[in-house]
Amino acid sequence: MNAIKVKSLRKNFSMGKQTVEVLKGLSFEVESGEFLSVMGPSGCGKSTLLYLLGGLDEVTFGEISLHGKDLTTMKEKDISLLRRRDIGFVFQFYNLVPNLTVEDNIMLPLILDGKKGKKQKARLEELLEITGLKDYRKHTPRELSGGQQQRVAIARALIFEPKILLLDEPTGNLDSKTTVEIMELFKTIHLELKTTIIQVTHSKETAAYGTKILELNDGVIVRETRIERKAS
Ligand SMILES: Nc1ncnc2c1ncn2[C@@H]1O[C@H](COP(=O)(O)OP(=O)(O)OP(=O)(O)O)[C@@H](O)[C@H]1O
Image (cartoon, rainbow, N blue to C red; front, side):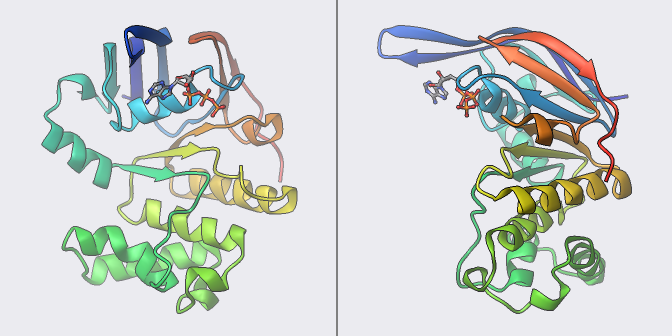
């Protein structure tokens, strides 16, 4: 089954009396386990698409199915559950809670969901290992570099074992060396955890970590390219 199926997707925003058409009829599919990079000029609708895929905004017209479930006809309560448990988000800014430790920041979604058992502790250990944060578990965000803070945000996004990870310019705030480290981490997550990843990026280098590139311009898809994996 496809992880994501998008059909004739349109998104308009109202600006006073004016309607702005941002997405003008997108159709594409993302296979389970794919790593899709969405590129295109500023303002072409990349983030808008990502938010719609994550159920963070309402579709104007068309369909979005995640693992066969149509998001556009789902009740808000079910969309919230899906968002919390099946989808992980990573943004350009890390949005960590400053007075919580690394491990509490990572566990926060579980604590908010009333879950903190043995299985979750094991998952935390696995994520601390994958993200290289084991020695920093008792630190607070302000004691970490930008790259380390983004690693915490990535571990937090993965704590529920989401099937889909949505990334909005996740390295937009990082220097080029740290960008490579974080992109290598996403590659590891993609290969080891088999997570389906959709990333929005401006950078060709970053996009090349994907298995496929979708190029948008002025609200439509202008190109879909399958790519060879960037070597480590
Ligand atoms: N909530 C909103 N209300 C009105 N217009 C919006 C809203 N969100 C986005 N837009 C408009 O939709 C268009 C696409 O925005 P979007 O952020 O998706 O572009 P983008 O391709 O991600 O741009 P960038 O690369 O600069 O982040 C822009 O013209 C933006 O002003």
